[in-house]
Amino acid sequence: IDYGPFGFLDAYQPGFICNHSDHQGRYAYNRQPNIALWNLACLAQAMLPLVDQETLKAALD
View 1 (tube, rainbow, N blue to C red):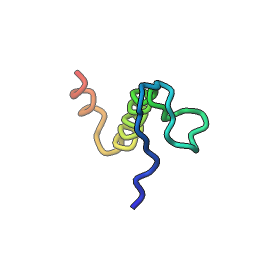
View 2: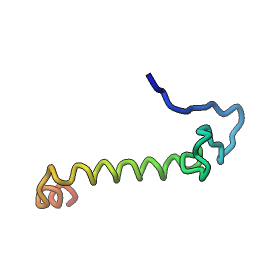
View 3: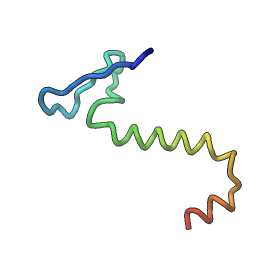
């Protein structure tokens, strides 16, 4: 089982990066809300073909 990279903050560090391969800081602690929105957008994009456009419009209205 791969739990992936993780870490604990002993003190608040907004730019903390626990993934040593994340050189750009994409998954830094302070960027978690943005990356969560990006992940949700990718999920929505993958699900778009499963629902017709009118149903989506009605749900958003």
